[in-house]
Length: 435
Image (cartoon, rainbow, N blue to C red):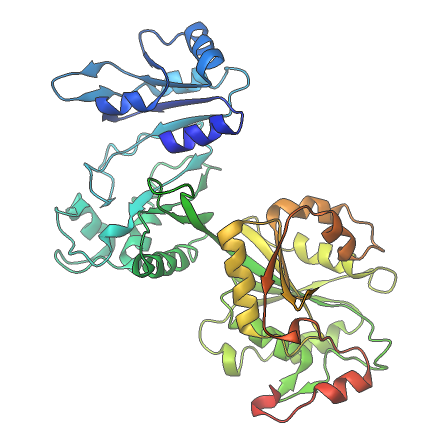
């Protein structure tokens, strides 16, 4: 909480920190100034913010216990009226210094006006036995998961508790975002376990995204941010240079569009939206059989979105159609082309991973200085994409998008699309399943 407050102030904001439970009295020194609830009138809080940009407000300090009491929910609501306030950060629960817990009946104490809830777990609990030494309220964790005392704490167990209505989702106000933080991720082993936990958590639609980090270490507290990424496959073109529908041309044991979708289904995406146009019926028909080959198992579901303006518009309109069909909990859109069946899963995964590490507006693969596909657009860019005229090409947006995170690849497959019969003949090479 205090680290986040410091970053808000560094960025030019004003912030109040407080607690609705209790905090250690020693933590009061982490704020530049402190007011008790007896002193915290609107005038005194505004004066403190004008001077320091950050003020901590607590209830009375109990010197014997070394704890400061929490504030009332009504005070939190009153503080929201202070002008030019960037955020109110609230510690709403505690775990008695243990890295993992489930809340008791009276916990957590979350104000109804809360817009973001951050359940926290320490990565140092992974692999430890489920017991009081490492877990607060073990019996409640057992009740929520059915786990036996003493069994190892796994990513699955943590994900189940943090995504449970009586666990990490308990008392979350309607409309609030829930973004769990997996903290103390300091080794390659803990990073792998945290990634596995994040993947399990994102199966729960009530969790917006998952942050992986080490808040007390170094200058970069966040290592990765895992959000849902959906793919948009642009397949609305009329194939005028090919002279026939290129999306449904044979490719190995499938079709060109089938090969693209198959690779995407095996790349860890939440879903795939295929934007159709000129060959709507035939494209939908060839994809109706479902995943095969590489995509067997838990493959991302495929949906279709129709671009009614395919005859008069360019790629930008198809991209807009695809973006509008994505759910609210989708944080990134990976844009792939239907005429790149040689696209490699490793490239897709590398682009997604770089976005997780940077949250760049756009992440794009590059080969020997040339940018290719697929492109990943962070949700923060979508409003600009919607403003593109129908005849625009997304390259125009890329030139004005600000920071583009480039991902070096060792393959020119990111540059090779298939537009003509000669392209198609050249790319058809012998190999398993035509790949």
